Length: 113
Length: 117
Image (cartoon, rainbow over all chains, first blue to last red; front, side, top):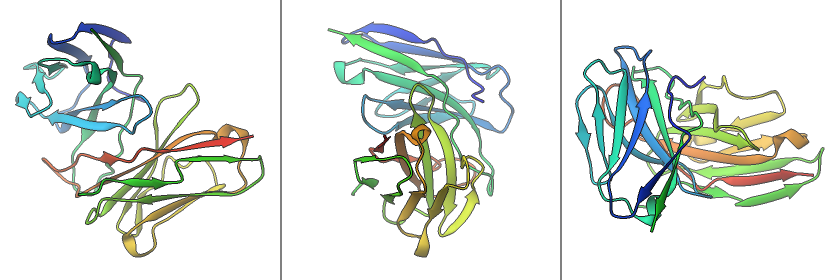
């Protein structure tokens, strides 16, 4: 079962920052936080991941709280093409362990014009 | 660089028939995964190959499903005989390596939509 909790849906105005929260209160020390998204009719797409430090790439920023019990994915300037279901996933990173992703229900982000 | 490709994009078969789905991972990726989303449910893991070996097949629903990855390149997922509840979208993903740190992301294909009538 998924070990994360996300809001079912969110709206965001085009051009504004989209802040998607995720709770992972039972996260353990060796678990990373991954974010993927699925745009309608496409396969899931990797966005970003992190352990305890904030991370930024060309797509988004990931802010992880100091106690690591929650995180926020930030899309700095949302566009209509960012409308998708966003999944927050926690995963152990150990050599030899399975890397399966456990998807929850995610957050449907609707970017409004 | 070509992404993960899957064939066919759609398949419509009758209950009891056999269907084989194919996945071509990104060149050089040792890790290959199969997932599926059945109607109204979440995306679920099926299995994980490292090269030609099955690393984890804990998500395979039953023995009607057979996955292979001969030679460690492309993979096939065969459903025989297909049942109505097998309808859904089957995703394949590949990844360059496993272990601590970066590089564990999985790159997904567009999926195969399977409809069993």
